[in-house]
Image (cartoon, rainbow over all chains, first blue to last red; front, side, top):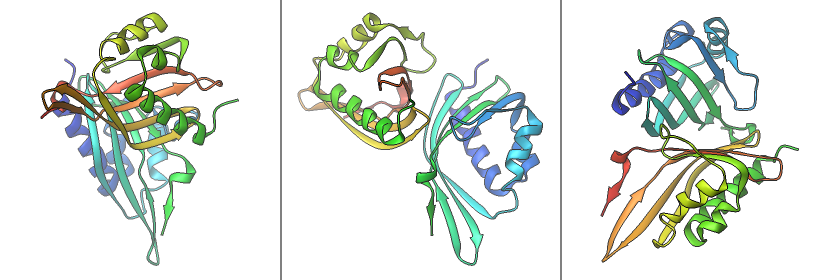
Length: 125
Length: 125
């Protein structure tokens, strides 16, 4: 059965919490086996858990926080706006606020993620 | 050539301005001939200008304002958060803040629109 809208929103929250506080393995465990990740939109989509794990591993070791700004959940899918602040060390941070679209299977695993952002949206401080 | 990110964002602005101030024909003119509209996500997509015109005609006569909250433009596509306030008469309004995803062709016409919102997101006042 398609996830309820509340369940979809809860899974978006869990995803952002895991990106901030979990390992690449933890994040990958939220994805379905054949899932795709297009981040940013326009890049070649990654497919499968090995490719997805490698993607999250690239920034696994950087301290970061995430915050959900807005989420709209419907029909087992979500669009959401979030903020991610990465601690680059020495007091420097990078902040990005992508809009993402996610689809979920009936078990609540992510089947696709697409992230809308451009280089010009990155704020270094 | 794929639209620049600035051009994509400008077309999102024009779309919202036209929804607020234009006729159903004006909005339809922003769409490509074979465009699809899925509003809300999970409903059967409308395809083609006749179906799209009929969709916008249903609320053409209601006074309304629109406001762009956030837009991310990349690769000829956009995700955006906007507010639409519809004047229902007698001081009553309905407010909705969908997140939408749009794709554009090289001429800047909308080729697809998907609107993420649920009934529970509608605020009546």
